Amino acid sequence: MLLQELLDIGEEIYFVEESYTSQRNIGSTLHYLEGVQAFLENQKVRLLRVRNGEQTLGLLLFNPGEEDVPVDFWSVFTGALAGASQKVKFEAFASSILSLNPPEREVEVSSELWRDAVNEYYSLMLVNRNLCSECSTRPESYGSIFSEQRVNRVSEIFHDLGNKGFSLEGRVLEVCCGNGMSTLALYRLGLDPIAMELNKCTVCQGLEHGVLNPKKALVMDAMQLSRYFEPGSFDVVVGFMLGLVYEFNKDLWIGIVNEAAKVVTEGGLLLFTVKSRPEIEILAEALRRAGVEGEIVDNTDADGVFDQWYFVGKKVLCK
Image (tube, rainbow, N blue to C red; front, side, top):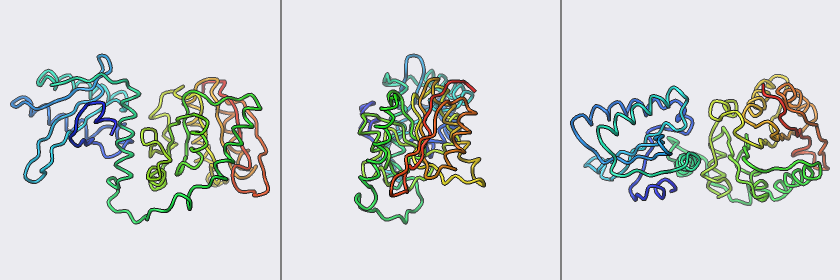
C-alpha cells in the first residue's frame, strides 16, 4: 500500500473516516482527535506526522495489540481533503497534539501524493469488501465484462478530436466512469485520469480486474464535484455514455455537466457522449450556458448503441 511505503511502516493502517467522501466533513476525525488531545495530557503515545512544508497533512497514532484486538495498527487522521472550516479545526487539533506529544518521526509528502495514498486506501478497502456489510455480487470474468470493441469506439473519438485540433493532456477527470471500460482508452493515450463513479459495485468491478487505478478511482457523486475540487483543478473533463437523459431527469445530468464546467480550467476541454441527438442537445445547451463553446458531433454507426453523439468544447468564461 502506498501509504505504508511513504511512511516506511509494516503494521496495518486504518483511517477513522468510513469513506473518501466523508473526508470532506471529517466529523469522526475531529471527534476522536478531541479525545486524543485529552488523553495526551496524562500519557504519551507513538505518533507520526505527515507534512507538506508547514502544513500537517496527517497524524498517525499507534495502537498496540490487545486481547480483544491482538494486532498492532496505526490510526490515520487527516484534514487534507476537508472543507476550509474543518481543515482549520484539524490544524488546530494537530498543533495542540504535537505540542503535547512530539512525533517520533516526520515525513514530507506532497499534497498530490498524499491524496493518491488516501484514494488508494479506500479503493483497496472497497475491492477487499471491507466497506460493505455484505456483498452478494459474484466476480465475473474480464472477457464477459470488458469489450475491446467498446474501448476502440472511444479511442476513435479521440482520433477524431485530434483531427479537429483538440488535444487531451494535463490533469484529466472522468465522471461516471462505471467499471472503467472507457477509462482503458484514456490509459492507452498515456493519460492517468481521476476516474469517479457513484455506483461502488461497478468501481469495485473495475478495481478487481486491474482496470481502474486504485490511486485515482473515487466513489463519488458527480453532482458534488465543486465541493471536493477547486475551480480550474482539471485541464480535461470527460464523460462517456451519460444518461439516459430525458426531460423528466435532465436536471440531474445538467447538474453534472455544470459541475464539470466549474472544475475545469479556462481553455480546458470538456467532452461528453450519449446515445441520441435529443440527449446531447440538452447537455450542449447547459454547457453553453456554463460558458463552454463547442459543437455537437454526429458519431453514429451501424450498431447504433454507444457514443452515437457527443459534445466537445472549451471553457471560455468563468461562471
